Length: 398
Image (cartoon, rainbow, N blue to C red):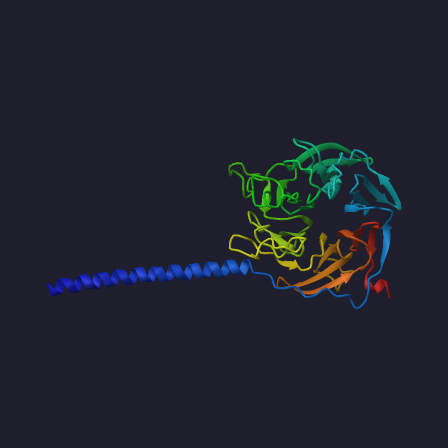
């Protein structure tokens, strides 16, 4: 009898040890997983204050007499296509500005209008140009952000193709987005803001607004988009929970799309866009309502992707570029962001994904709407009330 009880006890102890070992192993795995997630999604640190540089950059006006130059891109010969928010598209070459015909009719309301423009990566052979704008097409009063492509031939847009239209229309005049970039794998990314419907659109993948979208270059939806096959989902969505992204780049070094986006009062953000991720607006935010009241006490949460960085106070970011040119060695590999609110071009330096320096360039130039590095290596900036200017390297201002 004693022998039997001893065997039972040993057996129980053996299995108990085995279960304990499995529990310990499971706990270790869960801890490692949680640590890995935290490392890949760190909570951002507070930024340093923006300061004026030791030496000011000078500039020269390349395209003048423009009201709100919203977006621009460079043709293979170095000439420039630039949109006016009011609905005009211009080609600037050899000192002459020519109006392009065939531009879509816009819903010119509030922040809406003729927005971004980007050339197909193989434009030289196919002549495709992509344009985002606010459109009244579709059901309901008002408008929403649309994306088309057309061929640029003899100063006119032809062969127009409608690629995407946000729904539903709204008479609200805010948060249309919208920027356009391409990755290296045959995809186009574009943005639509929350259209002023913050409590409905951004967190709902069955609705447009507050999203980054990904399409193939012909406008079809990639089969590996994160919400393909989900019931009622807008399958063009790549990420959601955004407020109003008006700056976007494809970071060739990391192979990622990055956006900057407007917060409310405080809480502008730079986000690294990842497939299927939720960026939290308005459930979590570093901002508050314009009247100073609280939107939420939450700044982060396990369901949400944290921003790379955030601004308090808001600078109202628009336009985005990463400098790769040797013409500005002091800026190389750093970020440039336009400020609508404070009317300067922000130089932001990162080290290990943390902001270590902020400088205010071209102060007083005007509301900075867009910034691009040209094929000649110079930095070009779109400023409201001015037009397109070229920022001169420091060595050329001595």
